[in-house]
Amino acid sequence: MHGPARRSVAVVLGLGIILPLSANAKGIDREPFGQLADGTAVERITLTNEGGMQVAFLTYGGTVTAIRTEDRDGQLANVALGFADLGDYVEKNPYFGSIVGRYANRIAGAQFELDGQTYRLAANNGPNSLHGGETGFDKRVWTAEEVTSADGLAVALTYRSPDGEESYPGNLDVRVTYTLTDADEFRIDYEATTDRPTVLNLTNHAYFNLAGDGTGSIEDHELTLNADAFTPVDDTLIPTGALEKVEGTPFDFREPTAIGARLRMDHEQLVRGRGYDHNFVLNKPEPNALTLAARVREPVSGRVMEVHTTEPGVQLYTGNFLDGTLVGAAGRMYRQGDGFCLETQHFPDSPNQPDFPTTRLAPGETFRSTTIFRFSTDRT
Ligand code: GLA
Image 1 (spheres, rainbow, N blue to C red):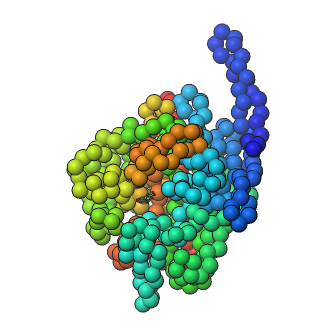
Image 2: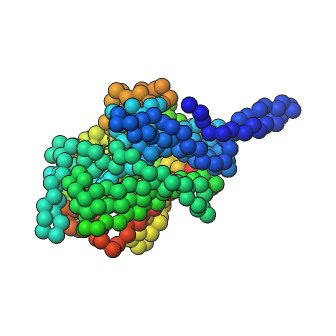
């Protein structure tokens, strides 16, 4: 296995001590990352920006395997949960870093109606369909192509989901572009077109730990969410249809609050989710505006992550189903709450909820959506 090209630099400390450091050289590195049972080769692609920040991902599922960012002392660490080997991604990935589609999150009763026709989906989460069914976009091999972008280093991942795949209508052409800017932004642009009316909801399911992958609980991370309301759920995690004000509830993150501060409150919604596993209704001046959805600060490392999105919602998921059965790339076992997700999205079960923003896509239209994860530190 060979990593990205490295160049040597030196740092001069006080007292005239010179230490060689190896920094990552700016560029795009592609390397083999094993093959699937049917022989399909999988690649790992690593983007490295001017400052040495890196985003690594696979052609399998567009899976983001690592995001290396600096702490307030300039130390790089990987802040995304993931596995060391392709085999683990294929066999047991709880969507670490995955592109999720066609429909991220849940569809009630694993069915929906569109233009008078009922579509029955795989019920892979109790009675509901979750994250695109049995073989969603997270388990498909995407075609990767380097693209020129004024914003930074960019790779477009494309996949054609054939008509009827996982019982969804229409040939759906999906293009997801990953861009790493020199301003330490990891930008994801989604685009899709169809040849028959269909529904879709695309996200990336990265799990974060801003103290570093494998360092334990994320409960001390301070979270701010730009959301006055959330969508409460029934006991199978399907929205009831209500938009509930966060005020006076453990879902009020309008001021920076430790994720763990209210996590064990005896609140019906937290009990149903086993923690946070809820969609927040983002405050927007107008639909599709690219606005700040969330800001997270990890107090020990000083790392800060902002999430900006054009999507109407974001799912806060606190790794409630991590149960000590998975071991990550850092050689550390993951326990409940060792990572958090901020999945930008349309609201869960929108195809069955006429009052939610629509997830319908018709021929001739292009679905477009952007999410930016911007990394910095609290160093002043
Ligand atoms: C989403 C869901 C969770 C869980 C995870 C994957 O965040 O809302 O309930 O399924 O994906 O484990």
